[in-house]
Amino acid sequence: MCLAIPGKVLSSRGPVAIVDIEGVRRQVQMDFVDDVVAGDYVLVHSGFAVQKMTALEALETLNAIRACFGRGSEDDVGASLVSENP
Image (cartoon, rainbow, N blue to C red; front, side, top):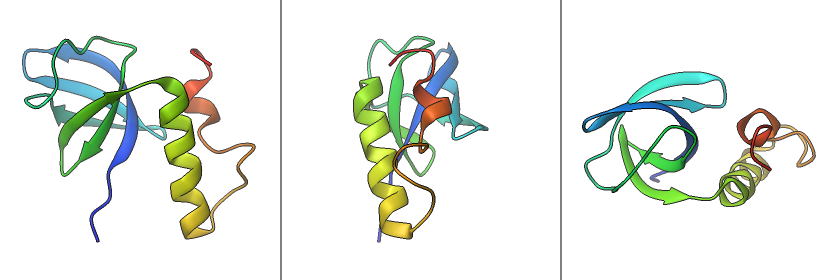
């Protein structure tokens, strides 16, 4: 099973960005998405951003992932991810 996780772009330089995924910062390749800037949300799979998404889409996706794996409640999932941009 393949899984892509939403994350918030913290900084971007060329084809590489630093992305916060639930409090964990990762280097992510941006080769498949255009015009990504700090503050954008992206869906990350295997170290690559595969699409841009809104903050709401990111929150809904995290809630769905957590529901599938039985972690946390939907009220608190992703709160840190979208706290700055509801």
